[in-house]
Amino acid sequence: MNIPRTSFPRIVIIGGGFAGVALAKKLSKQEVQVVLLDKNNYHTFQPLLYQVSTGGLEPDSIAYPIRKILKDFPNFYFRLADVEEIDIDKNKVKTNIGKLKFDYLVVASGSTTNFFGNTEVEKHSMAMKTIPQSLNLRSLILENFEEALLTSDLNERNALMNFVIVGGGPTGVELAGALAEIKKGILPKDYPDLDTRLAQIHIIQSSDCILKGMSEKASSKAEDFLEKLGVNIWKNVRVTNYDGKTVTTNTDLTFETATVVWAAGVKGATIKGLDAEDFVTRGNRLTVNEFNQVKGFKNIFAIGDIACMASDEFPYGHPMMAQPAIQQGDQLGDNILELIENKPMKSFSYKDKGSMATIGRNKAVVDLKNVRFQGVFAWFVWMFVHLFFLIGFRNRMVVFVNWVYNYVRFDREARLIIRPFKNKLKH
Image 1 (cartoon, rainbow, N blue to C red):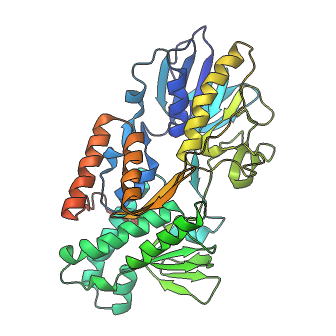
Image 2: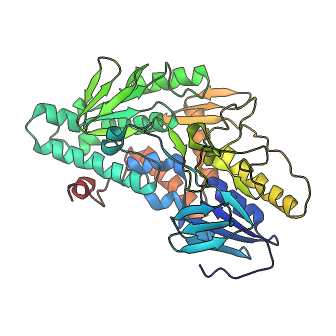
Image 3: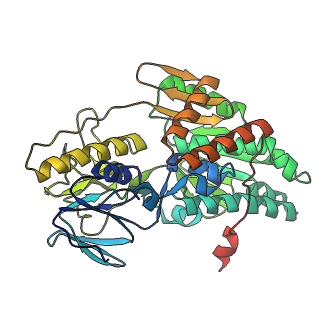
């Protein structure tokens, strides 16, 4: 990999997500060598992926080059690499570009979509965890409307204009709200010769409420917002299969649709060598102690979505969200430096800063530690928080200008089929 030898301890970080970047920043300008490995050369702001899928934002406005984030840090190296295996006996990582020895290893590989073993659903539905997946979904949505214009079969046309979102968490709720606004304000203009009123948006939720991790008030209000936008919410219903045409459930309900978005769960993205039952727990996550050390190791750590730090307050680990990842990365930077100097490390304590979700124009729900609110003010808070955590001044300005333009004009300019998705499937 052409990483120079050094007398400094070498810390290898796998993954340039929220956790990996937070750790790398914390270790900047310290007497350590940091090597960050990722299969992409950019950091993705995942909370806004749904806006790429629905044409509200272009992908480069929520992505930022990893090298640029850390360009001013001495002793920092980035390599575009796909990590294939961790050799825990020899303290080496094996990648598609070679092997690299480490003194300390931090796994921050994040999470991937969890289809719960249903291969048919995995084959035919759409995930939305990466920028390429979001672009595929954007293309599929637009291609389906183009096809709906051409067919004279009413059932086929309805299926092409029906959307089923599996999972009523923040991702599912925000995507449903965005699709509902497109149906209301954009589709009638783009497709005047198509009765877009027939388009249907469904959320299928296996439990008795949406936004289950938030307060009852937030869940209830979000449901009210969605229903006023025309979204159909099906609670206590579980999807059992999808063959590309028909969604079947554990009830009598079935849905004819050409578009199923799977937002029903995620699982840890484990790596060969650290994927044995000894290390992996519920949700395919790595078991770590209060210092984020992987079970059985002193020099191998895991942070972010991949890490499961069980406690009385969080028996199944911390939420797989940005804030725990950022906080773990930030503290682990201090702890590794303490470990190098043989000083005691500090236990991680998660500071819950709240959760929020937007359902569309002037509609959002926010749960903070001591206050909860919904509606227009919540929507402005949601926008401010997301702009604040975006990396890069340009990205913040581009997203802000897009949001203002979309709000004033009630438009989404990025509804472009740049890379056709269905043609790719045919080949």
